[in-house]
Image (cartoon, rainbow, N blue to C red; front, side):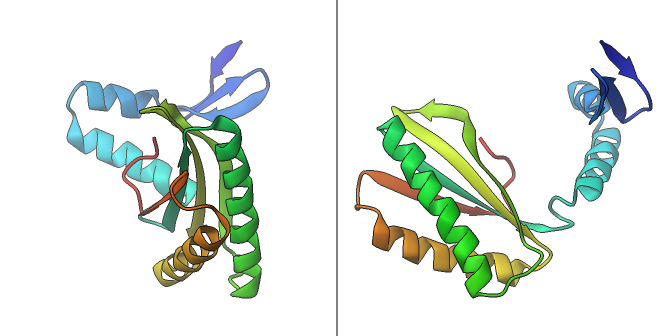
Length: 153
């Protein structure tokens, strides 16, 4: 059962969730000012860009099992590099299948890192890319890095 509690919160089966209907409604009505106000408030409360820096790492591969193994390796490398670089306070989101899980015959997985420092996100993603490419056969698996992405698909 869904019960509205406030403008931006909804209760679903006992759990309190963010309600994005106001943002969606504003976008559908081309109400830029309301859309921006709602979106920026949600981003601030969730500590998403522009209030924190984000790096999205996407693994793509034609073989679904190989893609899953590659993203598991990527996750391990990210965790290790955060420790090696002593970047305390960085948050890892994922890994999780991309919103568009399969696109152009490639299976896709996302892993995101969040930090207050753009420099740390850049340093981490560069180090991770080098280590990942050393350990994964060239050509079959692709790693795409997007800093402060507009969307994660």
